[in-house]
Length: 138
Length: 138
DNA sequence: TAATAAATGCAATTATGTTGCAAAAATTAT
DNA sequence: ATAATTTTTGCAACATAATTGCATTTATTA
Image (cartoon, rainbow over all chains, first blue to last red):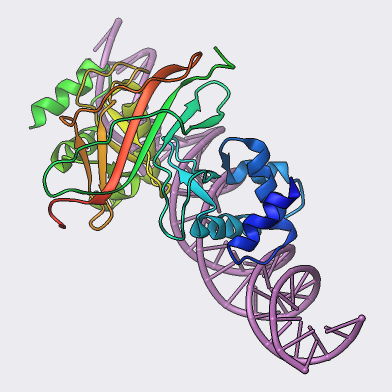
């Protein structure tokens, strides 16, 4: 458990601190996406709000986590499963948000055909967000 | 121009007010997506911020506009092209956001294969957001 | 045109995110 | 192992975004 977390931090040249370890563990255990607010709630009176913002930002820059856009103005973060490098995320997979329990799943294994854009458009990042009811709520 | 706006409001059982007319017109003229902030800027010292919030909310509920999730926590709104009814949006089309000029395009005509979810998952809404450089900036 | 219903604008409040800086912790060099 | 250096944290202050209640204004209906 803890070993993976330490490795991730070391591999990314990040100082090993309490907050980084704890927040990374949360993502591993969540097995889904977390919002800033979720982390704040789960780590009751542990870390400052600012620390959480900065930690998420650092993780995102390093390619440890990626953002998932949602329609309701709440940015979600999830662990990058594939090989992301600093500034170049490769998480072009599918995200599913349950309208009922609000859990966000990363459905890495679901394929989707690559999207052809009109002439003159260059693709950088693709986000597919499907919402509906998940298997637990159905 | 104005006729269409009035029809839309009437068809949705909405009182015809100045702000609703103006904001609807903005969407029609924009031919793309608008953020709350865009509307606030375009309608200089005309409507209260709160009115804009409430108008957008009303339009969204009625199925006149829909939200477009973005990675940078800025919710965008655009006119619904297809037949949306209250609470049931059908805007399962593609959105393209230019990383350079920030314009958001609704690429209705681009097809994409429908996405098959794992067993137990029910699909309600699909959002595909592609970001990159648009034809004007390329 | 009067009565009723709905929408607006203002003020106050809450939530969300950012910045600078001193204290604390982690890394490194000795 | 300890001291010097660098990085991170937490606090305070600030800035922005969004929500709520209520009185006034505007639109709809009778």
